[in-house]
Length: 189
Image 1 (cartoon, one colour):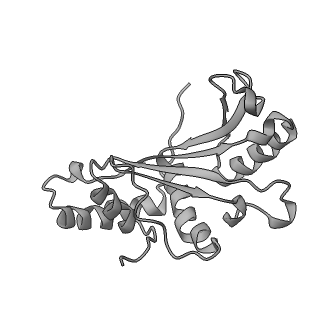
Image 2 (spheres, helix red, strand yellow):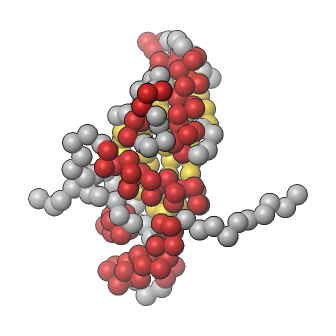
C-alpha cells in the first residue's frame, strides 16, 4: 500500500531552507550547503516514578504528552530491578517521543514561539547545556506552558526532558543553528 505524501512544508522548515542556511554558510564559513548543520530529531522524555504505584498516572501523562507532541508516546521499561524504589525489571517507568521531519519542525516552532515565553521568570535558555557533540538538552518542570494543555483539565503536573539533536559536529555550530531558528538564549555576560 502506497502512502501519499502531502505537499505541506512547515513554516520553520521553509524559513530554514530560504534564510538560515545562507546565513549559516557565511557565518560558519562553509563552502558546501550540505555541511550546514540542521535539526535531526527532538526526543521528549518523561520519567514516571509514581506510575509504579498508580497506573492511572501513566494514562494521564500519555494523553497530555500525545496532545503536546501530536504523536503517541512510547513506553520505556526498567532494564534492571531497583529494590529501593520498588521497581522490578520490565516495569513501565517512563514515556518518550521521538519527533522527526514535519512534526519536529512544528513542535520546535510551537515550543520556541509559544511555550518558552510562558515559562515563569524566563530569561533565555542556558548556553551551557550542549553535550559536546552538537546536541542541546533542557528540562521543563511542568507541561502547563504548552498551549495544547487546558489548565482547567490538568489532573497531574509533570516535567520533561527535551533533547534537540542536530547534525552539527561542534557546539558553536549547533548554537548558531538554534539561534538562527529563533531559540532564545541567555545574554552573554
